[in-house]
Amino acid sequence: MMRQSILALNAGSSSIKFALYDLASPQVLQLVSRGTLDLGDVPTLRATAADGTALCERQLTADKPRDTAIGEMLNWVRGELGARKLICAGHRIVHGGSAFIEPVRLTPAIIEAIDRLTPLAPLHQPRSLAPVRAIAALQPDLPQVGCFDTAFHRTIEPLVRRFALPREYEGEGLRRYGFHGLSYEYIAGRLGEISPSLVAKRTIIAHLGNGASLCALRGGKSVDTTMGFSALDGLVMGTRCGAIDPGVLLYLLLERGVAAGELQTMLYERSGLLGVSGISGDMRTLEASDDPHADEAMELFAFRAAREAAALANTMGGLECLVFTAGIGERSSSIRKAICGKLTWLGVALDQHANDAHAEIISRPDSKVEIRVVATDEEKIVARHSRVAMQA
Ligand code: ADP
Image (cartoon, rainbow, N blue to C red; front, side, top):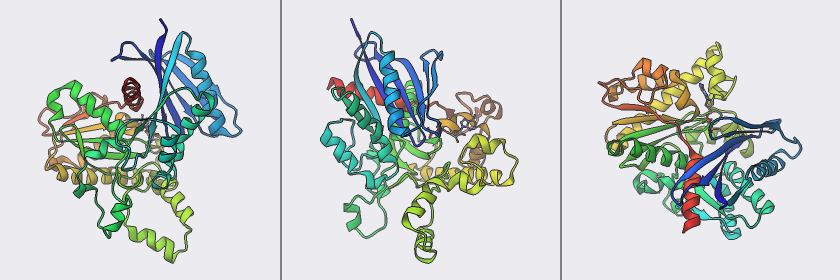
């Protein structure tokens, strides 16, 4: 019998990650291959089999990079299917607004409704929708499912998600939403698999990648998070500023005459680690640099992450577990050490050897807060939701 497969796509700012899963049984997803379409100056497709064996590394045509490259990636996936039938493509969609709080089958009307949320995430939403549209054009009969990064935060209470603005604006959707929800959902699930007792702990998950945020979990549910109305809020990120006094924006607009579009580019693409270091938004590059501005950028990153963590601990009334994930969280022992070092007063005690070894548990036995490193897998959550949506 033909195997049924699901393709999960995770479109980010500079790359699209994808993973192909077989439905080994109605409940079990088995990874077949995964890859990345790097959308830099020279679009490059890389893929490996489930066991890590390289399957593909090739440069794609560079004209009209994004759409052409997405099409080539999909053709590569289709060529790899062999005796499999692709039953669905699932997508990470950054913004679901107030309406999309569950995964949804992507009909043309739903795609339009998601597109109407673009003003809420002007840079990210079009990137989420690009592979959806590419697949709809290439293979219109293939069912597609959208999974929303905002949805995991639907459990955040009105008090926590409200801005102190005139009330009528809240009705227009001006509230905190939160992002990175698929990553948080995956980690929350992993914690439950590791031990049910972990689910009961007051937990902060630190998703530290190019984009970075924290999520406060109680009983496995989001009760607070550092990103807000937009993916700009909260932590210092690779190229985004994080939380900023709104008076700065008024000053730049009204006194300095900075154009709105220029301000948007500055806040999303020229700030954060890149802006402060003047070197790069990439943590590995900063760690390798001996420029004092690189150190200042990393210090600010850690300071602000610890400060926001303390605020989330306050929302939960305590902290019992701290989980690091995503590129920086999983791989930078020095950033983990810098953040934990500022949270000792909350009972955080890092085991230096375990941290250097990127162990699963990196807290000392006497630490009041259990500290863990857990690899995230947003594609897997997308595939799971897609399977459920297809079986509904
Ligand atoms: P994205 O948000 O694009 O999915 P990732 O989760 O892949 O990003 O994280 C990218 C970040 O992780 C970059 O800043 C990168 O430098 C950093 N990173 C990756 N590997 C390491 C490492 N070994 N040490 C320090 N930082 C790392």
